[in-house]
Image 1: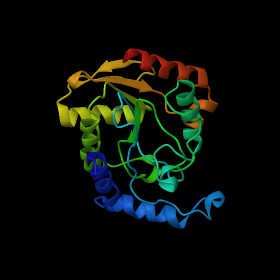
Image 2: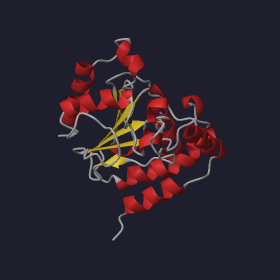
Image 3: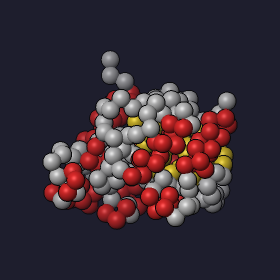
Length: 225
């Protein structure tokens, strides 16, 4: 019997509501990175991934052009995912320290990862109507994650997008400010944690490092016990 998550994921993959994003995805398929030129790119919207009974939800803004859009799985196959999964593995949230491609044996322990926007936007800047189109999928993911206790926003843009989502769908009135490691309470007693994005820029500038990120993930695990 097909699960509710499988039904949702089929709808996500088939979605074609945003012409600008469809055009951009097609452009990426034609202009592959040289190192991946012999690979078949996924080139469709990206679904969430992980433990559907999870208490922790990690949220990014959108899939990367040559990461998730190439591999078919969110936070997979790029430099950001390399750093993220080292830290998830260190915190014993992931069974592997790398997320390289779909069906690579990776699994998550009590965690689920998704993107607020299911398609890569030009210059990583989605338009309001594109986010609104995807919010129905994001909302359904949150509803289906019935054990959910805490949302970890990976990056300020993802954090602001989560706030916007809750203002739009759950009448959130508070003006939360992004800060790494800061925990806020959302409607329905969910917690929201700000977390620096695991991007090479943040790592190379020293804004975040493996120890700091791992310690945050361990603290998040302790907060739900």
